[in-house]
Length: 165
Image 1 (cartoon, one colour):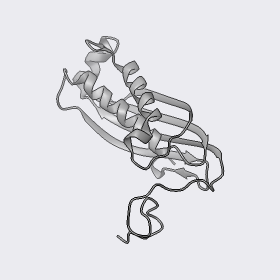
Image 2 (tube, rainbow, N blue to C red):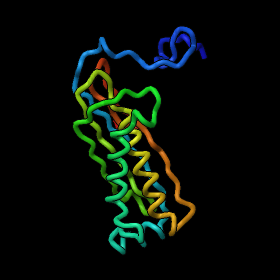
Image 3 (cartoon, one colour):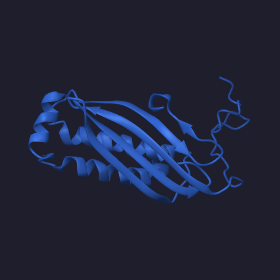
Image 4 (cartoon, rainbow, N blue to C red):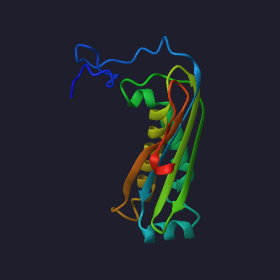
């Protein structure tokens, strides 16, 4: 790895970590969508589905959505070189996917000089971690898998995952 490679935007010419200067970038509408899965196992998924997705800790899916939203708004506190962004929208959905897992999707929007991919990733990650916490009394074998960027728009380039093309 060449630390001065311009593709590594968070490393300066002296190979030191650096926040990207976005002051000369245009303010545009930015949107990012990320997805991930929580593999609960068939028995856990059926147990919670049968009981309306409530545990002793409270409403499972609602709590995960709130946690993901809160985390997206604080991404700059989690990831050292993320800019503080005014988020206009964070929408998180959690749906059963197959017989043993939940699919989490986060869609984040802002109007700013930099994108919201990390905010979407953070939202999915925090929602997934919250699902693990809410469901761990039923199983210790819960896994978080396949967190990825589905798409991003705004700024100088757009992106769409080949997986979702």
